[in-house]
Length: 179
Image 1 (cartoon, rainbow, N blue to C red):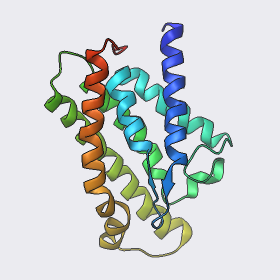
Image 2 (image 1 turned 45 degrees about the horizontal axis):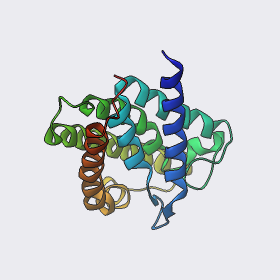
Image 3 (image 1 turned 90 degrees about the vertical axis):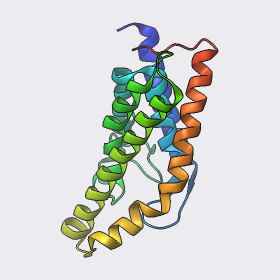
Image 4 (image 1 turned 60 degrees about the vertical axis):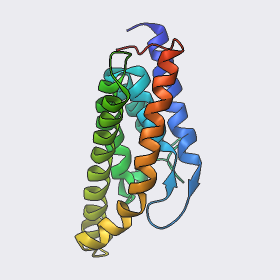
């Protein structure tokens, strides 16, 4: 792995952290700009480096740096929304398969939507587990879905398509993925 690839991965870890700080608290799961940064990491870095950047982001946060939406540290593991952070790693990897000039916008956006689905599933399942088993506040599947997924679907779908378009624009302007 080249030094420039490590710098790209670090840069995107930082961008995801910045995206976490731009948040609108609407309940137990705030609206943040982490998802577009995770997708953009995939679209621009390719699968391996994108997964590396999201892993670095998560580890830095667990080490105590307040890079998550509102916190940092090992205690974040019991946050009901931490499952979304876990989902960023496979999501970035999947989005990375949409990188490159050889992929059309539709294919890139499709990988982005699949990545979004992975984030939702991870976040939803983790939320249910933490609320029911750790915190001891019983929450049903329907209620959990209404809290963790439904409020974000339209916004995230639009953001996914816009991020795919932005990634394609950067590719056309000479930024090549490090696949």
